[in-house]
Length: 430
Ligand code: GDP
Ligand code: MG
Image 1 (cartoon, rainbow, N blue to C red):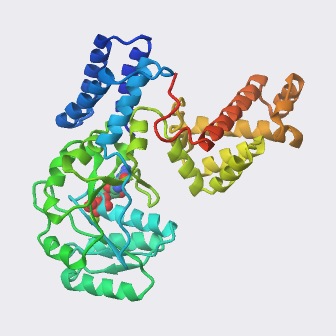
Image 2 (tube, rainbow, N blue to C red):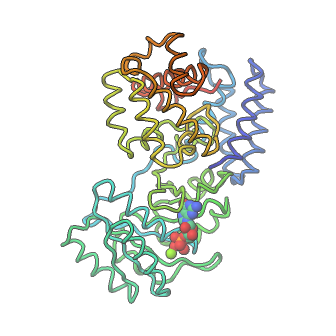
């Protein structure tokens, strides 16, 4: 996600960091470079202008914080303004009705049907009882695609394809009596340049949705703005931006909220039902700027059940090598490890097999330790290190590296606990 944008921005800040003290001319030069990077990432020119205008104003006017270098200061300002331009605060889906109704609309191929399934899965995992409804009177195959998804994620499905206008209100009335508390409605899309299906403007008022979400493909870049405009008369309340996993540039994520005046509520990051994430502007800015994504990592750990453990560890201020191993193992189970590791600041994206090998090595090292050593790693001196290395078929350097990584994880947990990582006080890359 955003590889090319992130890499190029990192280069700009790298150059600035080399300078120590920033003159007005350095700042101007830096802003010019950022501007170029953003434009080539397909960010809308108005958005670039507004963003950099604010950054310039602040970079010149604000008093420097002493603990930060000027380059870090500028990075912090860019991060904050990027967050603001993407909507500032995260906006939660509106799910308060009984049943709550969420309608997905948007151009063909944007990912509506897939997202309906993802949303069903997302809500079910959070204790809601969703129902997926297909409302596509044109294509019988549409209902089938959604029905298959529904079955896969074990969420009930209903079709309103025959006559959505009369069927949907009936389905909602029935849902009210049953256990369903959220109804997710999938609708047909139209090709670019063709207005949305006419029946939608009649349908929407009759079912009073909490959210009418515009589903757009991030890979089309700022073209998404024009595609989205066509759907505005439907009374949109937010955006779901899909295919971010394949988007190296980030133009759509940065441009859409301010250009369409709508918050992004979720992003799609893959084709599987679990590949949906709530959109948090600050976190997205961190990712774009290569500052890692620690809060996202913690959330992911929560999903795979490490959170309880992590919280316990945080409460007790104790984090042993056994915990470290359990955490590594859980992260590995959570899916592509490299995907998770890429969220940590300072870590590059290693190849999957390398990661696997590294994991096996770490595991072997920890398993070669005595219980005492795992629980009290500080007792591991030179001779113990040699024994552990021999026992695990590794080297003393490997053992040292593992211990260093363990220390780093421990430090990270401590910082998370103190809440230092949220809210802008992000540890900056060196
Ligand atoms: P619809 O026409 O708007 O209903 O679009 P579909 O839900 O049928 O999706 C079109 C294609 O995009 C399908 O092949 C999906 O698997 C794919 N797709 C949807 N969301 C994502 C995503 O977040 N990432 C990736 N890589 N593919 C996606
Ligand atoms: Mg569809």
